[in-house]
Amino acid sequence: MSLSASRVRVLVLFLLPLAVSASAQPAAGTETRVPVHEEPRHHLMLDTPTLRILDIQIPPGDQTLFHTHDTAILYVPIARSQTRGQDWGGAWSGGGAAAAPVAPAAAAPLPAPGPARPQRVNSVTTYVDTPYTHRVHNVGSSLFRLIGIANRTAGDVSAPVTGGAAPELENRYYRADRLVVAPGMSMPIATHAGPIVLVMQTPGTAAIDGASWHPLNGSGDFARIDGTSAHRLHNRGAAEIEVVAVAVKGAR
Image 1: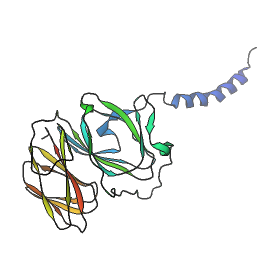
Image 2 (image 1 turned 60 degrees about the horizontal axis):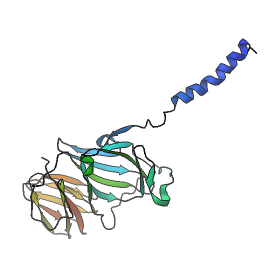
Image 3 (image 1 turned 180 degrees about the horizontal axis):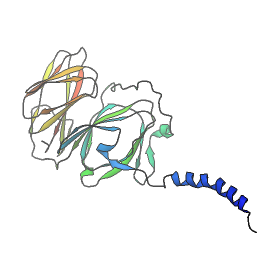
């Protein structure tokens, strides 16, 4: 049975929008993946040939793009929230009962309190040998924030750190010392043959004094200093502060 010309025209006009709509949809498995320092929620704060500092902030209900890690990285936790993750080519995991998608928060300012007791730092070094691609979804109700310190070198097992107590973390890429300073007091910062990144985990006001001077104003604020020179950390506020001093081994 043949169709009249008018009926053919009607059928074409009906099917055309459906075809255009279908072609506009991305094919399965074609999600974008980017280097970690180009992922929009991993804010690149410092970029040198040997060191990157990332301020990682994921608002509640938001998720990162797929991003690839290929260097050692150390994380200093700043603000907690429940998250889940998805490896490239895998399924979502983690998140507990909160793993169901939630609507993004309204445009009101996001809460960004530091933890009541700061979490310990942690580092991942396996990315050097095996790059890793994943994305992270904040399924909680508050901001998820970390300061990430990426060591772009092969590390240095011989790099000495002089002074300070037992470190909170140490491997061939990093040494992390936790500095707890009472109001009005100060303490020396251990020296190191390379850069040291100091990250404030608690609210408060502090200053780094010595060969160079840097303020630290609240949770997530950080400063990079020359580890070969003497410096002291001063608590200029009315409450105890905790600052993590990260020696980045092999970096310059």
